[in-house]
Image (cartoon, rainbow, N blue to C red):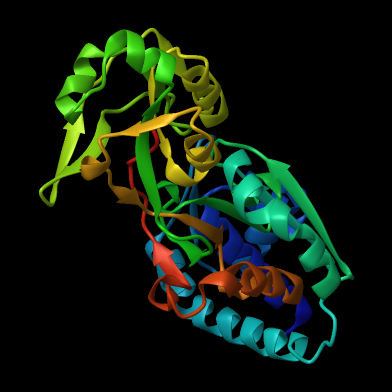
Length: 317
């Protein structure tokens, strides 16, 4: 296979997987016009149309689908061969661009940055803190961290944190004034601090477990936020009841500034995962980051590692 033919096939796969010339061009670091020219040359050489193009969408023809089915295994094989060579490198190097929500950086990343630097001194870790879901290919990230239930469809994901138990909490001053709820249904009489979904901006019912069954309670309140830290601050000030991850509020429960309620009804949700778009493009430095972040959970959650995760809908608040 000539070099330009390989480049054309690689470009075709990038477009087909992203259904966008713009996103594929950003991923391949070429201009959309150059990518379009490459596809015209490939279709001319093969004598068949591979893509349906409109101003708003890109889709595969039947011939394009068949070509993609044949190319994926071949390109995956080439990527595995290159990755095998990377394994011989003693020191992974280069830049890894990572997007992660603030709470994940505080709990999982920040405490281990010095250790990562010691283990991999030649890797530059470029971290962007962003609570909303980020399209890795579109924005040029190598990987991201999100709760398992929030991962986009067909992402390759490795668990890096345990399941998170959620707790209903409030300050002592709030409970002294408004009383203590004894069942999740009692929350409907309370001022609840709600958190909007980062993906849709809509709040959802609060989830609990009652005798092994999921219980969703629609709550109300005069404060609606999109940041768990702000919800925590509001609860500490006595503004109402908040439903937050126990690992987030643990220091305030231990100090007595917050009180947990409804412990018999609490439930756990999927913890944090590191996700990326394809094993085919995993560099030695990204592989090192994945292994490093998985280390604390090795063995305990091995059945969850390296799996393809579908999109889910549950979320804090």
